[in-house]
Image 1 (cartoon, rainbow, N blue to C red):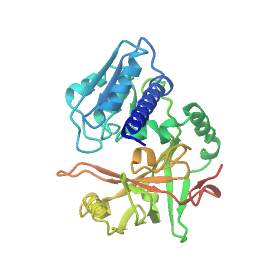
Image 2 (cartoon, rainbow, N blue to C red):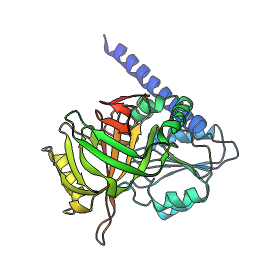
Image 3 (cartoon, rainbow, N blue to C red):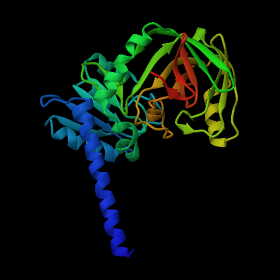
Length: 333
């Protein structure tokens, strides 16, 4: 193949990717957010996600002429507040899409905007490949129906057992109801979703958690080759087996912060998106059909912010009472 032929193939490939980006942006605007012609839409982006923000802006502009895009400096961690002018803009919109490196989901700015009626999609850490492949290519109408159909199974169960292939297990009880809203369709005032979507989750009663859990997929968006074992006794984390990988070890030690006894599991969930794949980003990893996850929380102190870490399990067995929900990483209806 000559140089000219390679150039033609490269241009064709680029054109194909550009078309996929436009199609994904159209799906977000028209299917997921169901933007209407009279509505205000705010696209929030940062230097890491500008290309995706631009595609969303262009797709939104095909539906409404009340579309605004702002690029803010990248924050330094999930949950850090956006600049005050951005937070103020969020409150004034019908629809907000935050395609940023770090999540705005657990910020006061997002909470206030939701209370004021904005429907919001956050896409923390979204990349070009995540935007055009995997979980974003799901049929979100079908996914919404599948997740809704799980209500009849889940409403009867509050106790969860997660076990690995060596027989070690973790038992926990959920607090309140299972959340069936993360289905990719965000069409009601005040509603919030992640994109790509596709999980069912619930808050955990921290004091109910006891046993051993083996995290083998990702830890806080870092792919892991060596499992992380966490031992918990009546809600208190008593041991985290730190792996040899230096990057992962550093991140876990920073999370522990010499206060291992204060770490709690506060959320459990499982994936429902058949198109999602383990990509090294919690945004998509926790949506993979057959995977499950836990969220660990290190509470804030006078000198530190609250920290959260998501651990993904790809080969666990999950039981709700006597019902097998997942068996060795395979989802069971």
